[in-house]
Length: 126
Image 1 (cartoon, one colour):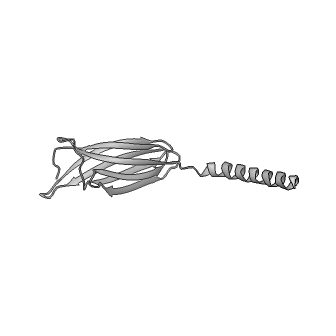
Image 2 (cartoon, helix red, strand yellow):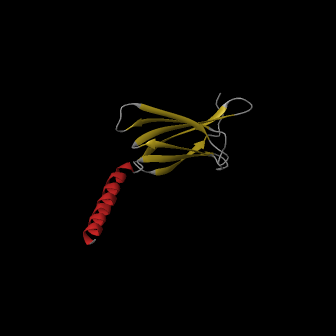
């Protein structure tokens, strides 16, 4: 009986150890990015802004492109495989024609969560 308990305990121990070692390889290495778009004059969040992200992954030679729109809170959220350097371009179309824009650059490290504040210029472009 003691041999069975010892064998079962050893089997359980090595099963847990193996699971722990291999599951550590599956840890989340993505970087998470929130782009917060602010108005230059009021410093308040702006919803409905078109956000474009261009990146070149530091470990890979190909480029990555993502786009989206800010929500009611003025934030567009996404994730990237890190490390990455992102160019952020924000365009806010105006009802009367033209648009306002804001630009920036963000560096993301592996497993990092970051908020990038982009300010929309007060000047209108056509």
